Image 1 (cartoon, one colour):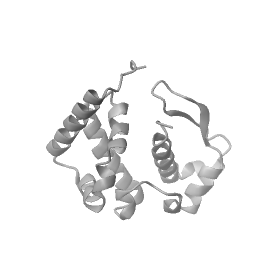
Image 2: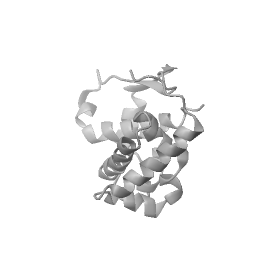
Image 3: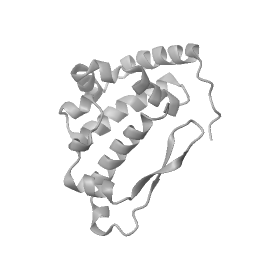
Image 4: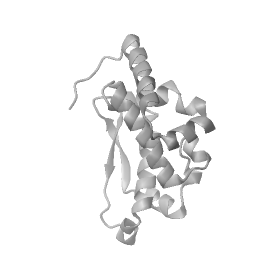
Length: 154
């Protein structure tokens, strides 16, 4: 496990600045650019970006790559409609996605990891043919992980 980092305002501000500078250096970021154009307040949101910085121990370059990759994967899974520029909603999920979510295969545990994020457990035992719907697994995983990340500060 990575050592816990004390999140001082100076570290946060310098990391956010570094992250933005690194994003601008990335040439192939069409999904990011689309999302930014659709909803700059979401894409540039401090709390949203902090999720990526925390994941990368406040290394701006790595967080920038992860953020751009996030939008690339989100576009692959959900398309380039308005969902690209906002949080995923239950209404964005297909009936199969919802069935997987309701199956209990992914559960939030009543504990948190060292960074304060909720622990999550996935078990696909007994899911039968649902396991074949790999895209649905990824869509549900993306939406649930994104949802859980918003509760870090709760």
